[in-house]
Image (tube, rainbow, N blue to C red):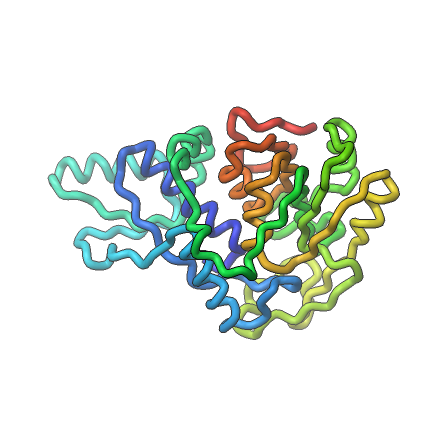
Length: 293
């Protein structure tokens, strides 16, 4: 898949959780490429591949050997109905089935608590990280997923992924913030940005909001100023190292999620913090997450 890092990690964790729930063996695959966004730390394919090497080691996404097995069946979207048919076929033929699955969200989202048991003892290989992937320690973390800005709705979606800054300000007003550090991680530039994707990835942007003639217009947003006017001193981290962002979100004491796979993965990995789950998100919360209104 050629989407973002968060989406690709979430896909593998969801399949891992489903396999654990069904008592199936699960084999990971390394992430080979992701969509390069304007404020990413890397801006070319070589740098992206180096970065993904770190991601794959961190999550233990190693090359698999499924191709060495017989009866390998590729399934883009695994549903309950397809799974039942495959189980029946396996019992009839008395042969093991090896499935190469792209995603199975319809099954995992129907029982999101299966993440809990599957990831209970899952540990990131953080001791292998280079010093460039430094953890930013903060009491309260906000993930602000911006995209093209302007509450743009992307193809295939019914609502915008972007949440208004006022949503997060309202949340902060309901929790204890005195004496606590607040860090906001975002893909939003401060000023309007004209982004030209790498030629090999231009097809990923065709049809998305702001795209025209090989370039993408990203609307700027002065988040630090907006929060300051509301009375909150917030450190804003725009773009940069995605591993740093993910680890920081996954370790903070309070996490205010966005409608984003990166937020979702961080929340799954954050076992001790208070998680505020956003309204109208298409992936359901775990039971202990706080549903924000």
